[in-house]
Length: 158
Image 1: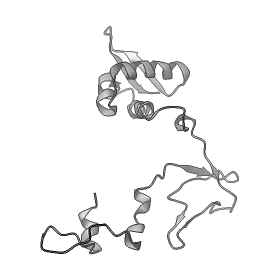
Image 2 (image 1 turned 60 degrees about the vertical axis):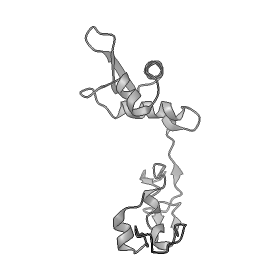
Image 3 (image 1 turned 30 degrees about the vertical axis):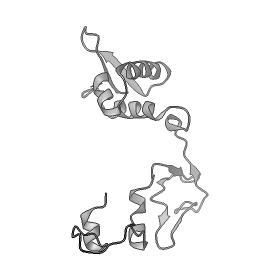
């Protein structure tokens, strides 16, 4: 979905009029290239071993030269990729990562129930319950507790 503002500002040639001839394909040009950073993955972070500065990929992009820096802008040391053990490839499936992310976005005050997680993630209550139990046993990422004397469990970030 392209924002109408960009279409109007850069005269991209969008029209609802059927009598106007338009190309069938969208032309990707330098105007749209400036907005690549908003649609690409910028979660990967880099750290400088000397000064300890942390950078996202978006911060390291130089649009004038169309390159990404591989050295620290402060002290010119070679940047190292940060390790994020939680979301390393192969450790958890996509659904499991969504479950963790959904639960971690809730604090103790606004804890979430398993059925609410199911609605957001799109899996079964049994999957949420068993996986959350496993995560609580193995790591300190999320917590869970019973609501009064009921069987329902509340999930929240630790």
